[in-house]
Image 1: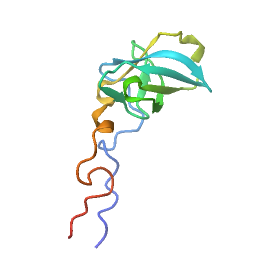
Image 2 (image 1 turned 90 degrees about the vertical axis):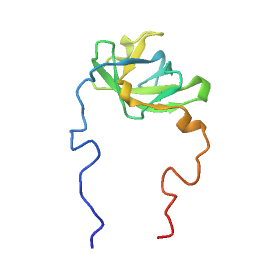
Image 3 (image 1 turned 135 degrees about the horizontal axis):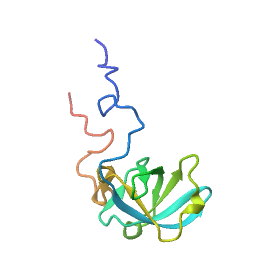
Length: 127
């Protein structure tokens, strides 16, 4: 038979562009612009923001989306790719960017050694 195909993406077929979240949490402080992106120092403690998560102001106005997450564990940085029409120059050093609280991952996902073939691929029993 077939390969169980075509049951839509995850998230129950919602459009990709979500509205503003119910609440937002501070995710980082603005450091400097770089190649049209905004560079932030993460302030989420033991969490890191999702790649491609929406980035917001405190009033939930969307400013763009998380583009890259990088840096050492104890000093995580991320960039935000601004939406068209958002003026990167309106951000001042130390300004805060916000994300939805459900768009974070625990740092332990990146620091703990993977146990027994979990993660992507891997772990295909003997069948």
